[in-house]
Image (tube, rainbow, N blue to C red; front, side, top):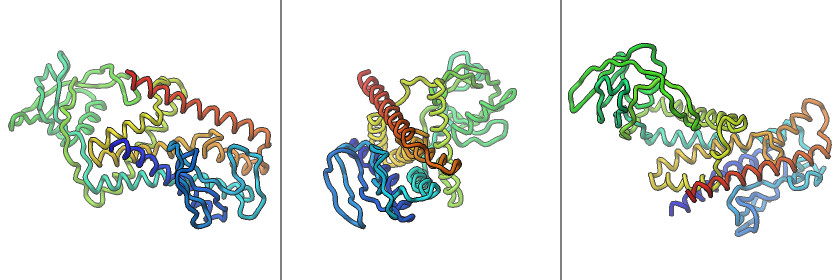
Length: 350
């Protein structure tokens, strides 16, 4: 059941991406021949609104086939009024941006839904205490709850971690232990750890781990929009940063995941509850939006690059250059997909 939910989530996110392209194309008068979820052999299709709508056998993506646009053959063009080829560069860029934009909008609404339901967030409850750490020396123990630091009220583990990592000098902690309040003073020390990208970094820490206790974050109606906005921006920034680090070699290529990782993680999220599914769906939606903006000719970002060239230099890129770059784009794309699949299989095999 959880694997079925995973495929439905992935297909739904692809549908919204392609729907963005479809609506933008129809808005500027481009004839859309095919709207497909998946590739390969068609399993189901029907004709509506002058477009063939299809579900295909390989659920690893989707596409909107517009009149005059064919990535497999860039020379296959049409000069009819309802063709993609006859539209201005700005109109084409509008169509191309609409797909990633739809993913960002969808992620925002998913985070907004999460905010309305009250997302779970880690509580500042201490789990393990490292030997000889500042926390150990100060007498902190497992199951202690941090109530305040230097007079600043603490309600989440994230708040506490941020104060500790940016601190200067000693900290006065208000601790709740077995229903009683105690006060501890300690000084964080710079410790070697890893960040979310699995990089080794130096960070101020006190030597404690979370007990894994969480609570529901009660947001006022006025805070739900800001929560959704902040989460969408954070996810986008995190993915952009991760891609930059991967390209620069700061993050090893073995960290790249493919569709198997996406399905497995979504399946795990399903087992953890629907709120987790919404969180992960929002993150994948942002991921799709960001990845499609990469300047690879096989993706939306590559086509945007060609149209920006035409807009700036008042002429189209040469047909030969477009063909060569498109082929190179497909090679890069399939290489990345192959690497992600290889890493997925390697992880599954332990």
